[in-house]
Length: 334
Ligand SMILES: [Zn+2]
Image (cartoon, rainbow, N blue to C red; front, side, top):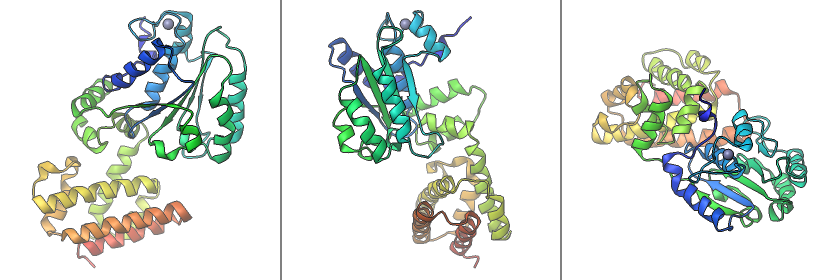
């Protein structure tokens, strides 16, 4: 029976950060507060889990968790009593001060396996000011041999008082080949790995999330909607068909495609487009010879609407209807 896959292992492109960490540990220089950062989709949480499992392993081998000791067996089962993962209770929401108080309590207790304790906070910038302040003292002088691993996309999104109490470790982005290999290994039957690597900007864990959370389907519905409007379907009807799609995701994709469209009208070279699977949509822009200035302007419209949406949560369908009317205008249909 092979349970080995249940233990997280650092991935190819994460090895430089991994070496830096294991070296600091071997020299007894590893700080209590560890900040793991890097671009979206590079697998920072995966890395943090691998690190936590490694720190709790009784007899690491070749710089990795052994997979055999009691600590590793508990980690494989996901029931190690000395490791906790703190995340927002709902995606996109804050990590509450009560959650940090529970975390502080966990840190104040003695380790149950008479060794280290590990806390992973992801994403650490989901802590608001109160939560961050509640963490400060623990981060400064945690009781016992505890490591707090804070996971974040960008360092600047954390309070300076938190940052200054941590050692930083940057997770590099994978090369194209590494991202491709990782996804091919995860999804051997998929034939769109090339496209996935392109559209996730080589953040393979983001690609994974797209597949597993149905975001790829949103992408198809969105692109089909744009085509439908081109061929005369009403914007209201298309906006209705988009109503289940998260607006921020919609803005993300529309902007992503516009960048491709700008490249396409400037170069007339379809091979330079990232969303190569959406050739029908790209051809529409190519065939109509849309002025790139209009495409740039439309990107601005999207950015403005995104800002307004974050601030005031306007009615989704109205937002989509307006976006589609502007799309139609840009194509010269209105
Ligand atoms: Zn072990």
